[in-house]
Image 1 (tube, rainbow over the protein chains, first blue to last red):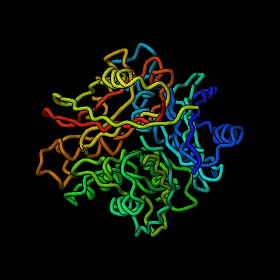
Image 2: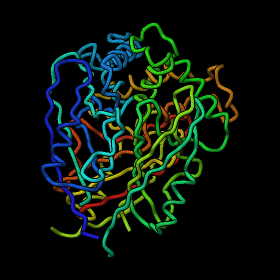
Image 3: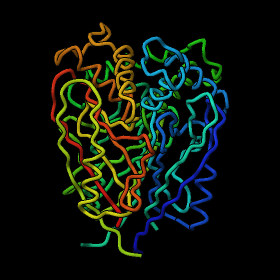
Image 4: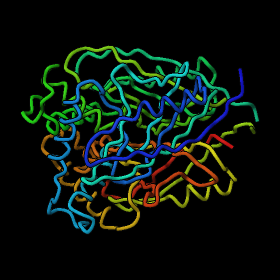
Length: 142
Length: 142
Length: 142
């Protein structure tokens, strides 16, 4: 058994309004570049108005329907909200973040993320305007 | 301080339609068999239409009510959805997965999962038909 | 490369009815006391009627609106529920827990949690009465 090591990285992702942006390839490329074979990968999104999501990366209609459902569930400009100074999509963005997740833990085996066939890793942007989103990455393993 | 090690496992779970299937015992048995005492356990479900959930394992009505609430919140056959080719319960399954989680991280101390008295680990099947679900498991510790 | 180590801790938090209770400072203090510099922190809440949440810690209206939204989404005393013996806020508490999370994984770099500028770590109490909540903490790193 070889000794375990750890490593850190930070990805910067540009979003262009609401929607799901896949970055599975960028995570896989970082693992490959460092020759990490087996371990645990953790991703943490450093924001409160966007999420990390593992979802189907085959039919784009799935992402369209996810977005449509969340827009109906958490309506922009809902008169329930008091926190409106940053725009009518800001409080819905915080709620959508609470309903989903900002960190993920995924095993890595034989140099590959232990994702299912149809799983991709996404940043889900909940604001209407473009943003720069940062994902802190940690790996422990060998 | 002894050196940390890691280990991997994969559980295959058979589901029989919508509902919560507890597998806490299978996880605990794997820890015991390997004599893992202290560390971090990570579970990752390799699917996009089922979830991992930690919930009450006492009164079965809790699971019944969880299911009833999610069926009302994300109705099958909702005309909002475009992605319908795989059945009217498929897009609701993706949304229910987004609203919950597909990975969990749980500390292990003295050979036991650090779960609360009433917490059990479940696969939540969101499809109406039977499925085979795979959970990738990682342990780091000693 | 120095050898990795791990450590455990348990925080006990007192809640006083529904709402978000920040404990970022207590987590940071534990890291500092142990002089942990770089690694992965995992938090696990040992309950089924409260959540762990990373959310904005600037404007308190955000927490007020989160609470208002979830109270409307999962109404107390909903006639849909069968599990009512523990109070009309108990089943909503389980559902709110399912809609959010009970564990978090956060990288630690240079002795600091890799949180974004506005991110705080909260226990979200979903019951109306006061409770004592326990958070199991694990750190692996150096």
